[in-house]
Length: 511
Image (cartoon, rainbow, N blue to C red; front, side, top):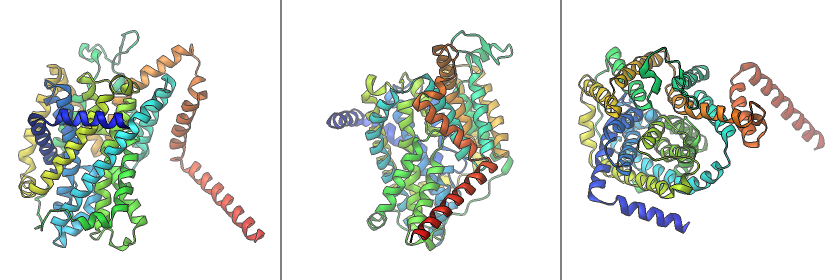
């Protein structure tokens, strides 16, 4: 514990320089603007900033990306409260009570609640990040090729199951991502797969240009198609958070923070599920259920705490297993690899200081959003009124320049354009994008560990099902798929009803 505090203090001291603080403030403001503008997502913001920070030192670049990530998730609440339009998918739950409060003339109070909930959620997740990462890192040392294979499959399956409305579409998107990751030379014998004679495909599909296209260029195409409506902004009162709101709903804050952090750890699920789960849990436990959806302070506090607590939670599997907990965390993982940081089970052995550096980056990001939450509300209102027809050309230029800047290859611009078009059509057909991203990230992990496991076992598949952790992960994958089959769920429901009925009968007979 003392060693951890010492490393954390060392990290804060390293980042507490005027230049670094200016970077953190600038990145948080960029994130706030991206999150506040409807349609622009945190994933797109982090991906674009990754392309613009290639030349910076690793610690500075990652600080900028984390501040952008935290700022974007927080910024989504501004448009959710003022416009009833979630700036990011993570802020959709905040619309229910945030906009209802705004219509009652309490928009300022709603933004204060969002600020306090976001900061406290980040801090709860940050504490979990500092406490659990070393523990999970030690557990991850027990993982071998067989366990990492099933972990990759589980990430794609659970992400497809929990994001979007149709698990089948989520799984299709996830396995399409796995296919994309298989393009290029394979890792053991370097022969080309799915390249169709195109030399540039031999190096594979780069993650950042693909994500910039899927989240940036696809959004530009969506705005061109849908013609965004003219926004009407409600007037607002003071935005200073109220201490009594925090004290009155402290149980809700802690519960939502823990739920958000826990969901963040699950691969590929993300902030929107964390916000809705926290909101639903708060409603079930609340003494003011009737206020939910009509301007509940508790509901807004729960949603904002949950989605921001998910951010540090999503970073925990990135650091310990090199598996992202959300789509923006997938970009963060790619950025770490680009900058020479190798996350994974050995990080607490080889580079324990980096874990506490990330915790310190989260702390700086939360302080920045507190500053902007108190001071820049009027500026944010003006930014929200900028027509998206003026913003989108800038986004497109950044997408093209950013994709080219990573490796100075025109081919990456073509990748960005292709994935933008694919992402646009997938959105129109209601396919979730998070499983696609996770599939691209986890494809390499799955491929290498499947082949490594088969090599170690001399082609024998049994270790994939007989080792304790492998068997547990396989059961989770199988159970997740089977529980979406109506015949199975009906059978389980009948067995459960019969079993509970028998127990009640015995209980009443015994009495």
